[in-house]
Image (tube, rainbow, N blue to C red; front, side):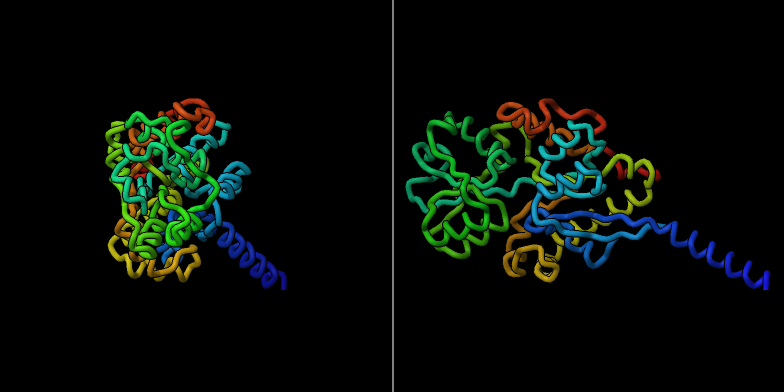
Length: 321
């Protein structure tokens, strides 16, 4: 009897040891355009021995920020300035890659507006006051000698979906919109047109080819303690983005299936016009710092008052090499 009991105990300890090795890790993404590039993870999560990965989509970036601030989130996506501000507060987080670049479009139904220089005296709806689109646009306006606080009116009362619907209904004649909301608006009103090229205007104004809008962020503690898990997530996100870009119709179906807040048809049409990328942090750093310098010009507190330190950038791609 003693031998039987001992055998059961050993078996139990073995099972406990096995389950103890399966560390749970949650990857947080966002509903809406920022999360589209990661949609394949719902179907094919990362694989690494000893880890159980799950993915959860949050409704808003501020909910993601709260999870990083509380320490609950170890992997997620954020606007670059929010990531920088969280890091400046003492949280040990770092950017691993840029996964979304500029996808803003200036949309107009006003025949008098042919370019940025024609915006004097106009009202332009810009969702996300104090966010990347706001300050990118302000930098571009100043390049044309326009004071965004005096020479025109910037409206911040509407969210992106509401701006798109207002453009379609003719209630708004000028707006700065990201994809896929730009595609949504253009598809709904044939009188709307894209004015200029915001990304090229940014290059002229800031001397940087593009501007990051979404970054993949890791807790440095997770990277240090679980490098295999970090590398698995990093590569799986890269693979997801490449798959989404190459197969927009299939990706659109998954976006709707997993309730990311965008209909399949809109996501499919918008993906080729969006800038889903995977740029590792070492290569992305110059573009990030170019964007951060614009925030320092207009709202330094929004990134913590200074450029992030070297530790803000982590090279996960080199792990294990």
